[in-house]
Amino acid sequence: MSRVRASGLVQLTEAEPLVSIDDAREHLRLRHNDDDPLIARLVDGATEFYENRIGRQLMEASFRLELIAFPCVIELPRPPAKSVTKIEYVDTAGDLQTLAAATYQTDLASEPARIMPAYGEVWPSTRCNTFAAVQVTFVAGYGTKPGLVPEADSIWILAAVERMYRLSSGVSDRVMRTVPMAAESLAISRKVYA
Image (cartoon, rainbow, N blue to C red):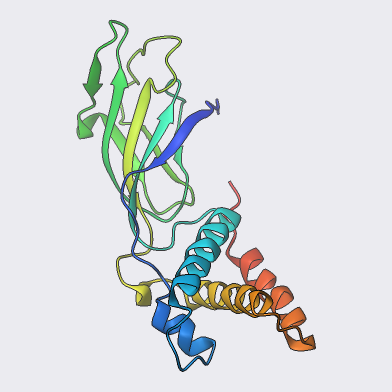
């Protein structure tokens, strides 16, 4: 199978947070909300790091995958993929065209999800020397509600937030040193290998 490197992956919509500030505050056993701005940043940072680490999109968001040409099979990063919104390409004349959905087939159950031409179809020719000659817009993530995401992901994020919060507060104890190892086991079990 031929491989075509992506020019980029652009996140088009913001995902709702998997872990709320209230959840993090409860996990940290805080009775005040004085540190909510810090906790929000820690949750955002931990979530972004974890999603990149495991190669998954937790909460639903829209993306655009930009390729320099059509490969035999397009693989969508950030599983689980929910849907393919559209596939556009820059034709040889330099005009942006949209492929009809009937001309390609999707396998959204695979991780990563795959797209290839429908039976009897071929990918169209694209303009050379164009970074985003092929643009695939898709939706990825487990859903729009935190309850649809595997619990292990929330546990990892909460453990990371706790570790960073305690370290920022100057708290250091033996228990805090063991959290990352347990959390790392969760991350390894959830990682996508393409």
